[in-house]
Length: 473
Image (cartoon, rainbow, N blue to C red; front, side, top):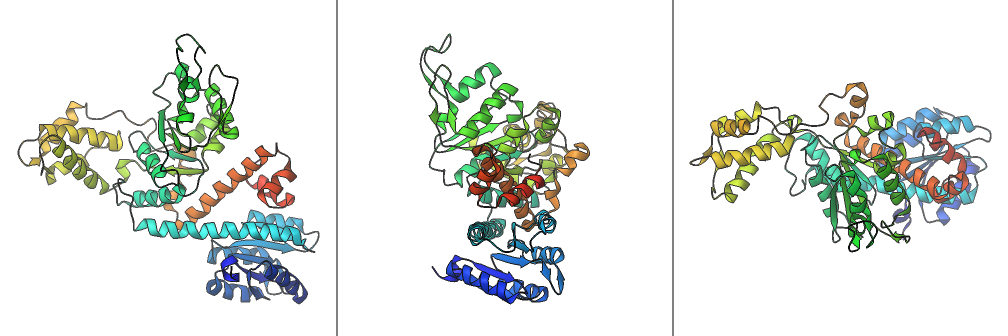
């Protein structure tokens, strides 16, 4: 493998001896190296070189280290930065990590630590670049079956392509009827697991007394009526994707059992003493504000952080602009063909009736209304009176969302990504994924911090700083 193929590193260090020391050590590892003696030279090299990693001395003659770190991150958000500080400057190093540095070293640098951290940082930087490229491709390449050209749906399509490629838990948030199961299926279909089962369970539709048996299965004779062994949904999803819809309705006892299953990747049927190892990807969905449920104690905080490594927020139909016309035309076409009325179209003034409705039931309500309107239609068009009749025959609305568009100040803060750029979204995703990796490493190591740091390939002091950053204790 060529040096460029292994990864590129920019060393920003004014001490000639230290530059030589770092350069010799990293060239032996096969990395392509560039050097800068000053902050100005570093800022000039960043746009031209686009390195995977910057090794940054925070004490430079012409620049403040933290200010330079911010400027490098602004110029190249996908480039990771590892800072180097003089012995005893831990406070400066901690501030650098809080400002977004991937890791830090105190001089003199330990070569073993350096090699491990650099390798992990290069891998992370490459992943961020892949994320950016996927998002750019997806913005001009909508997903088949996901109808919509609004900014919210184009963003959703790009995020679906992104998260599908990485085998981590996904939480889909959105009001009732916005199409959460459709998005979950697309995540599965675009993932490496697409040749294996997609198993969907609506946690709100199954009585609590039956949900455990449905998910985990049971042995013959485990309880009255268990006349044969039943394979649960976890086992049915082996190698594939398990979709838990309305996970916020799950009882406290079921939440505890689900958490244990996610941590251990094993299931135990009711009536059995044997555990079975399973391999599945979890995609969950909710129309509730789970963050608020965590604050009120209705939903377990540890389970919440386990299932929301990536959050996809589906916009309500009222916020999707001209997508309403695209969806309406599609449903008229589909149900026209189904009911022997091929060539049926939606009249322009009928579209005006649709626009005047608030659609509390979202896309599901729109589909149901247009199915009825097609049945009522005569001739070649769905007219305004057909749509009005269809709306009135459903009482004017379908079952509304559990939560409306306004959520108060806390909920409003949960949705800043509506205004973010693509690169800012990449940073948000990387932060969520990093927190998930740290929690998983701590769990595996039974919260032994040095062991967790070894799993993550970072130093113990960096782990402690990141734990503080993410509120883990």
